[in-house]
Length: 171
Image (cartoon, rainbow, N blue to C red; front, side, top):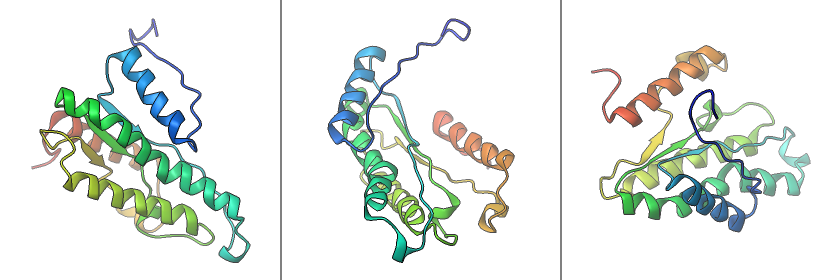
């Protein structure tokens, strides 16, 4: 905190429990004076063929990778609307537009997260209608399953730039 002159706060919220997610958002509003930027980044994965996929793993992955994002949005949007400013960043995956062997549930969640982002965008969640972000720049190699951490960071950087600057990174 002191090295970078920022304030940090840890929340032990269980992302499978909607009441704890709402409490986490309320705490952040109390500690920081509001939630201006919400980053939906929680995620887990289990790899198995569908016929062998444990039901409890399915439920946990859906709860953490998808439902937690919905509950966080639901809790954070009222404050963003009141301040007439906010950003929501969804961290999805190339597996949201495709899949790999035995990653069916993870792919379904990440695809649904992209759908949630698009549906939320249509609702213009704030008075300015500009609080929604989703990873727009996916490097071509990601579509072939050859993602590189450098290109992932570049893509995220471009997205963050656009969200904060309110203008396209490229004309």
